[in-house]
Amino acid sequence: MVNNAGLAIAGAIEDLSIDEIKNQFETNFLGVIRVCQTVLPEMRNQGSGLIINISSIGGVMGIPFQGAYSASKFALEGMTEAMRIEVKPFGIRVVLIEPGDFKTQFTANRIMAKGFHKNSVYAGRFETALSLMENEERNGKDPHQLALLVEKIINQPNPKVRYTIGKLEQRFSTLYKRWAPSLMYERSFMKYYKLR
Image (cartoon, rainbow, N blue to C red; front, side):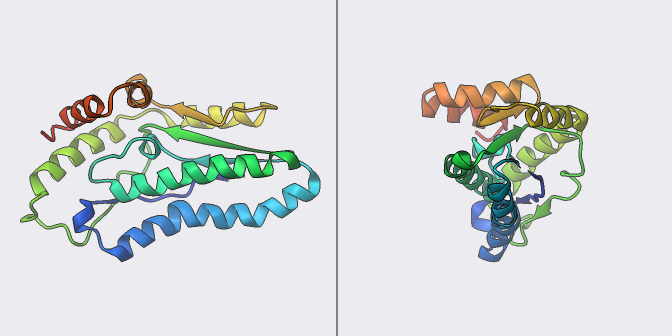
């Protein structure tokens, strides 16, 4: 079973309504839990199964002006790690895939925070960062590569906990976050998105 449904609500945390944040979690996190709870009894009964949860590099790095999206994917990461351990004795494998940018309809379907307006104190920085993100998304990798990774995982008897896929610099940035001092990472991240 592959959990790949998701949406992104863009905006500064201050500009997002609680209902918008709930909507983000309803799809990206609670929706995944509901599907898992539906299939797990059958997988346990048959003594095998595979669940692949599509996360994001935004699930290991807080993306500016995508805070609700990142939070939902961070939650998915933690839940998947825990569930993987819980269901392993029943022969069920659980895996995370953390994609970078791929050429999909993700950009066109992004929802803007209703609280965002041109006079927002965040407007200039938000538009700068969003423009860069959308350019990267439109020029992302071919989704076929992601499908091939899913096929590879399906055929692995003992898959890893997580697989990061995307452009080299995006994959490297997740490693950089793990090893660099926090302030150094934050400064370089802000510089990259032109948010200084």
